Image 1: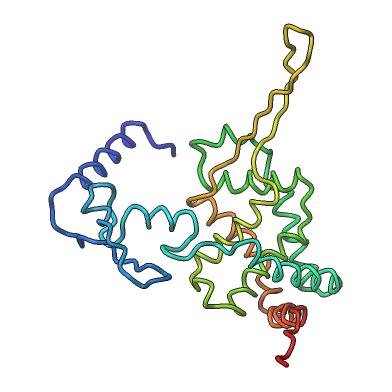
Image 2: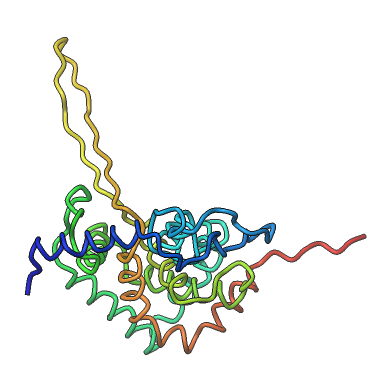
Length: 256
């Protein structure tokens, strides 16, 4: 049953009243330490600053968690992630007859095939996060991204957590967000070109590049949908992928 706009207005008014409340039910300063220095954040919590409802973290770290799935740890950089993704993709290509790999590829292909139509990035505002996640899968399908790439991404994120836990945050939110962000980069945004005729007879190309917001619950839904189809491969073959990545590392020259 659809919600009425009156109900939405009441809920919004209730949230605003809670934010503006003078009730002392929060900590004054953010509890998240700096990951490098270890010093306290020093910012006011969202409740203390009247910027939100969080009683323990500031607005800055709230937004950080929306983007990366962790209050302090960012998603893996391309340089850090690339060797794990390469090892995972090499393993998948050399084990295509493995029943778990075959099932995962078929499952991801089915999820992409049934994701529905693609919607341009400028029309995503206001859509439910589940629908936006399906549109992201449809965009991957339209870009002809193979299911093997998505399987490699999911396995690579788990391999990174297994091999370098000091560079990760071992929580579900960070993991599925990392999977979604890596998949999102394969085919993100809407790109259009139009010819514009000038008075002197020349033609210029008008371009539009619109990108959907890579933050919030849509990343959790997208990452969880991909990871669900890859669970058996991760459980059965993760150690082999980690070993393959380590074997591909260059051997340091011994000191003279």
